[in-house]
Amino acid sequence: MTEHPHAPISVEEMAHAFEEDAAPADLSSYAVEDWVTLAVFWGMGLSVFLQFFTRYVLNDSFAWTEEIAANCLVIVVFLGSVMCVRTMRHIQVDLIYRFLPTRIVRPLELVVDAVGIAFFAYITWLMWRYLEIVGEERMVTVDLPRGFVFYTVFAAFALMFLRSVHNLIKDLTGARTIREQAQDDIHAGGI
Image (tube, rainbow, N blue to C red; front, top):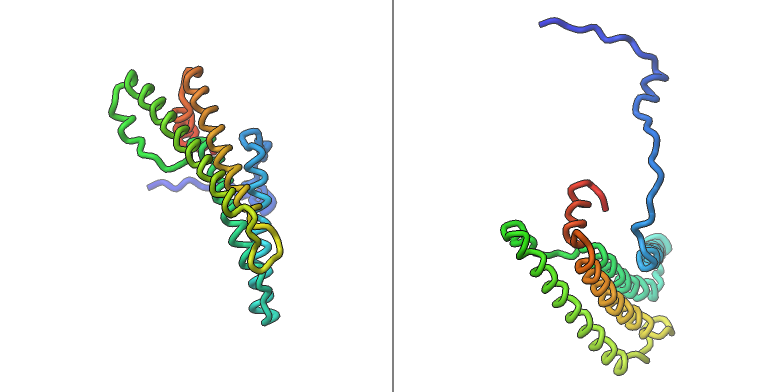
């Protein structure tokens, strides 16, 4: 076996060997609700940190931090779901799409889109009815309206409905469906 001698390199060359030009950040795929979700997530994180700090460092925990964190979690979950609807990231069984002929897949996707739209419309209506009943409740430890959380969930379902309608329009007018584009993004290592 022949050994190939390596040219000696300096420490500075080693240090710069792993440097790469950073590509510019592309934030165009994010919508307003994504940024709101991020802000609420950080608020939740700060609330949990404050709870941990006051409980274990100061040995006198603030009671309100747990309720604020729990309500922030509810908001993050439902607003995050809007992003999942927009980008087709919700869990779904797409195995059947792989085995069916292409001429059948597209109409099946349109049916699934219509069912999703009907579901989100119905849940939005139910949430509105729910708000009529409990929209004026107050939080337990903080004198704030709990309706703020409920109205955010209502807005999230309404946005999921609108995003579903938008996806259906894209599926009807585009050469490729939203699901196909999402699969391409997954395979390309995208979002």
